[in-house]
Image 1 (spheres, helix red, strand yellow):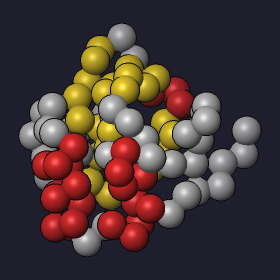
Image 2 (cartoon, helix red, strand yellow):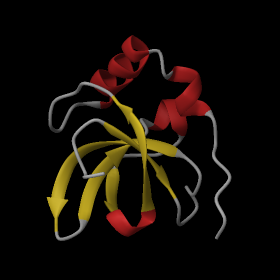
Image 3 (cartoon, one colour):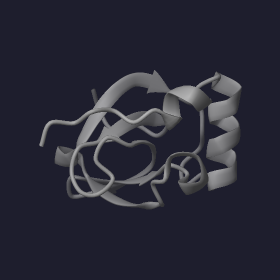
Image 4 (cartoon, helix red, strand yellow):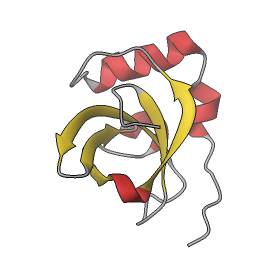
Length: 92
């Protein structure tokens, strides 16, 4: 899968390993900007390396650089609140 705005991904490295987040922008050079949002999943808005992400088949409809409130409302609209809150077991 390609990095596209609104794609839900799972972080596989760092203290946020196993948490789901949403791609809100592409930063080039093999990185993207992701957000949880923090109130929902615990992942704050930050740059993430594509090699440290696993793509899921789920996607929400948001615009580039959407605010955390817009991302949260899009997740609610798609009915994915419980899915986003679940942590995934990641083998390190």
